[in-house]
Amino acid sequence: MRALKKTDNKEAEIMKYIAEKCALDWDGTPGDLRLHDRETISVDTPSMNKTQYTNMEKMIDLAVIDTSAYTVYAWNDSSGYKYWSQEDDYNYIQVTVNIKDITNINITYLRQDFERIRNMVNIYNMHE
Image 1 (cartoon, helix red, strand yellow):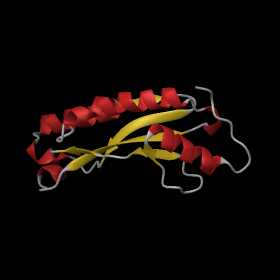
Image 2: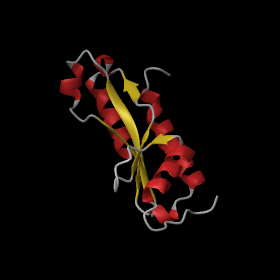
Image 3: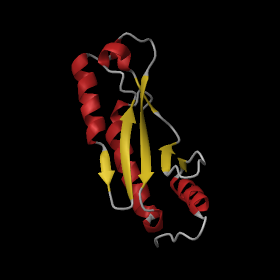
Image 4: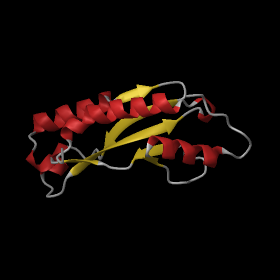
């Protein structure tokens, strides 16, 4: 797939296009070049021990693909094991794309990289 071209004041249209083609969400805020997974990964943190939780956080830290055009990364609420082990609720993992060069996006590669990161952290999805 060809790279997208930016024309005057077309940033919003390009972001909408990328979001649609990659099945991601964009909140529509001008200048906010982040796209988010439409589904968060629910993590059953109350049932994890400290080692399991620490390993999950290490995996999240490693779940990054950085290119000249974008960065795909996973993140979660970083309140930590002590907080989440005392909660009755579940923590989450979110996958986000930060667009760095909107004129140089290859939709196919972006979608593949997004799926790679999502698959890395999806092992913690309690619904899978």
